[in-house]
Length: 579
Image (cartoon, rainbow, N blue to C red; front, side, top):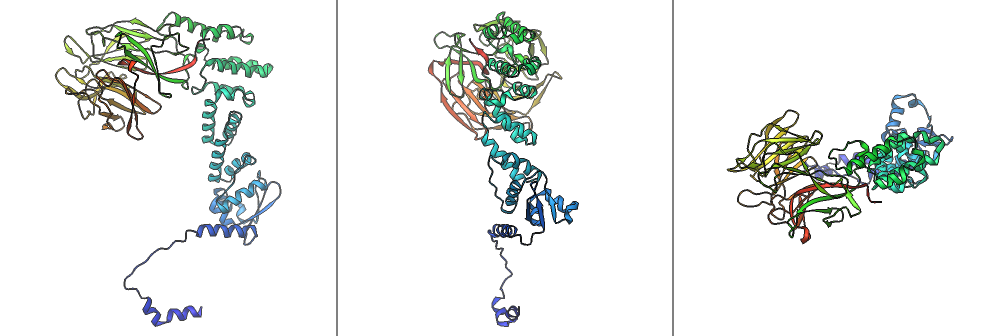
């Protein structure tokens, strides 16, 4: 101390250190927190300056410092600042043995923890109990990596018990994806009836064929028949039996002895198949006639044959980027069902409508009631099982009228007129509204946009596009409406504009590689696909990724033909295999 005083009082020394200007600089020892924790851990292990003893469930006593525990855990912070334990030297930590408590103490003092399968079942609830969020999250990540078909049901139940919703969600998704493997394991047979219902009622269940769902239900019931038979009616309510092939129903389901007293669901399935063979347009919709969402996704396309000029049914698989042409019912896979409206696009001055029926055993076009107004070059959109036909043109010129077809009543009715006459317009459906975009008025190319609200039967003008265009196509992806290509009147476009309802603003995105007029557009798996076009660019496909704002160009087989208005994503599977 005297030396320090002598040093600071030395006049010559002060003169040397006197700065010319007032400057400062901060220096940080990055190793300081690490060395502090290492020293504190050493003090704890040697029981130096420890002011609290933690007594585990097995009676073992561990030493610690209150200030360290309080800084790391909200549980200890509350204990030592708000409750009677603040004045105690020893506290009991119930429901934790010394091994797990020591692991958590080591983490508090070092920031590191090693998680193993041996202790995970007690470590996760212990970290919840002591409110050590990092350890809890680490346990969740560890269990997520351990998921397999033999343990995913148990992990999901464990996560639900301890309110780990992230782990519940991931284990549920894994179970749905690996459903066919999961139902082979012992955990599946140990499910309660409510847990089994929760599993098989999921739309995301990865069951390519509904037969497998039926079989797993019967397997579960027969495992403990005496105690589980009474649950069978409730379970069958969630088996989508109408989507099972008719041959399988007749051979396996009808002949199942356990179902002799449960005829309602069998009769519903048989009636469903009867209606399909009769080519009935409107089939009653229930959860059991609704395909699961996790089926095999493909794209149905209608193309005009270069050789025959007839309409072919073609398929594209986005996952494998493979094509199939003119698929009929001789193929082993067929779509669950699709209704496509074609009206006057091929025959001007026509008001006839046809429906492409893929429920039947041979794809066919079925006549439907005529529209109320003769129109072609129109726009079409589907909302809430109603088909909206907007604008178009006839001998009198472009139209501003619109009408709607209710597929339940099979009747057309007129709706309010647009403020602007539009033909070769684009129609998009977003947030339960119908958008009429661009088109041709009879004298000018339009960039204006109108929005129809079915609840109020009104059209409202919204923001205009940056450029007028007709013959464009629309795709909706993740709440954004994309208007693709078209023609300005002086040439085809490769530009694309995007409309977001929340902002009410159009914005330009990256141009496509090629100009396109009336291309096919569809959205699937968070990507936007644009294929063909009626004037050039027919043998190509472009894929847009919103995350990178970029297009990928692919070629289409030359025998694909000329693309026309008919591009629809479908889910295949769920009992659509011939048996």
